[in-house]
Length: 229
View 1 (cartoon, one colour):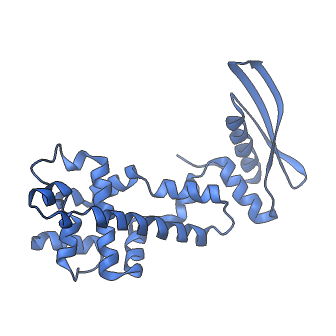
View 2: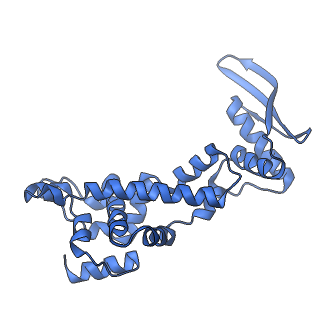
View 3: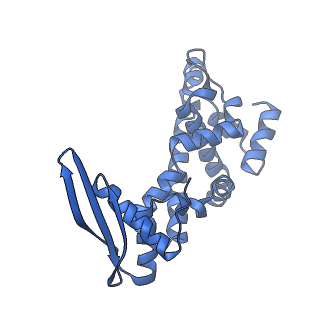
């Protein structure tokens, strides 16, 4: 691995790697490892490890930051933070594809392949974990993931549930108060109730959309506007 590449990696991870061979492995695609007859130098195992570390760390932090969030809300927040497209975007912004080494049999441009970009980021995290442990891995993740803002990406129904559970220890109840239209063109009106009163209503072409609109209406009345983009 070139000195300039190591310097770039140091800047990305926030420390100078102790084991340069480990980080070289993180940027060795299986096509190159196979080409050289060194299958154990592929970054696939590091990718597996990095994926596990990332999901566990994000899960723990979400669990700590949102103590009243239901399992479904936690899962949705984690999915927003950790997904192939998001990891690929981050990987490309960091220029990890410029360090990745591929074999002659590799097809296409690594910079344009979402899965390859995401895998490379995870492999790098796997190397960080093996080199410096859990604390350094956490610092690396926190550097690139704004975990506390994940709740802003929840749908209105999940947001309302999170707020009501925290304040009252109960779940909002949704009731279909009107259903009309032909079988293939239904229209639903739903009300959401909690703390002994109807707090919002909404309409939609199916129950799910109507519930979402009712939750959004309730949040608006409570002063919690939905500012999702």
